[in-house]
Image (tube, rainbow, N blue to C red; front, side, top):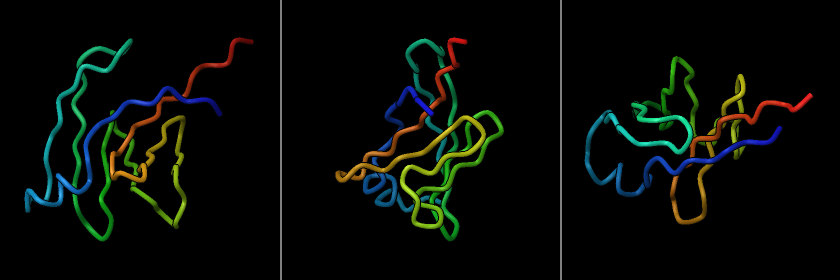
Length: 88
């Protein structure tokens, strides 16, 4: 599956905030302003339009679910991926 990727936050910076959760309101190219909730549990996860994506769930990077994905880069930047519709 092909995704369009959007940088959401940096995991190291988020962890330094010592918060359980934080909302990020971002202008995502072609999608407009979106609110993404990032929260800590056993894993750090993000919630985007009703889809919960956990970073590195089951040691899978990127973790994909229901046309969405989350990817953590080597510099701890976290990206949200939105599937590009097939051109059939």
